[in-house]
Image (cartoon, helix red, strand yellow):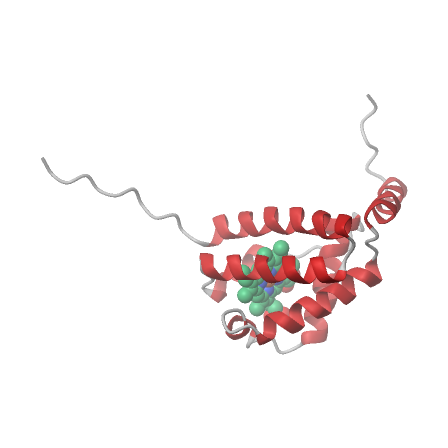
Length: 145
Ligand code: HEM
């Protein structure tokens, strides 16, 4: 089997295949993200974590580039999500709520294929962020004999 050439043309062709298969495109992703973050800001648990965001249009633009790269292989995002979340003191409950809201918004706004596709990626990324940000509890100490 030939390796996939890492060229802009090849990425663009794969992106078009993904759009054909899932209905996802850059404009649809941005619309979905506006709905998702609109709801996240109102959420009792997530809202306070977003209270420090000063430039919402900038955040939506960054996230649109992020998801364009993750979902459509657009190569438009070059940030460091792990560092961006470090100061927020997120807990497992934040991640569970974030994913539940992401799923509800995806199911309401995207095609079934598009929602499945976005969710699979969101779950994987959330898991790796959660593992990177939240220290694992130490194993319980054995009682002294
Ligand atoms: C667990 C709940 C989460 C909360 C409360 C949260 C909150 C935030 C906040 C406050 C920022 C900084 C925005 C700014 O100052 O402009 C941010 C950035 C970002 N978040 Fe989250 N986030 C969460 C989970 C996630 C997950 C699961 C993903 C990906 C699947 C994600 C992707 C990103 C990205 C890509 C950025 C931009 C980083 C950069 O500056 O390049 N977040 N998030």
